[in-house]
Image (spheres, rainbow, N blue to C red):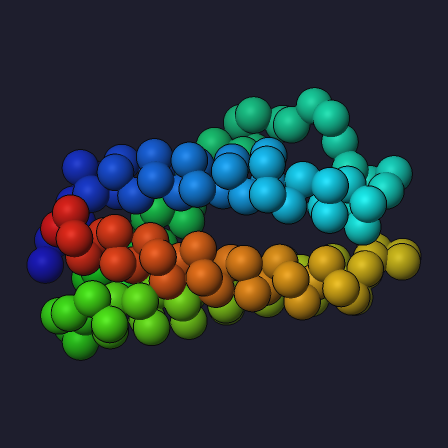
Length: 128
């Protein structure tokens, strides 16, 4: 399969919507309470856009482009593993280098990233 820019854009939009619901509504108080002074009220928009763009590129290339991803179940599992890897690197690096970075946040954020990317794998498979 060649690279699919249309699919990448669709995944990009879905990722933003789902993550904004998670970060803005469902888990907002949790992230604020765990991050305390590290939490910012003003998001760096360019960095946020790049995060979702890189996530969408990764899902399109590594998950939907994976030769074994030929059904929704496999798309979920490969996407979930991709998300686990991505979020674990981010959160465990933060845990290693940021003083008092919360372990509870680390665990929940890795679980969230795993589920988010698993769902994005399904969405990518659906729209492919």
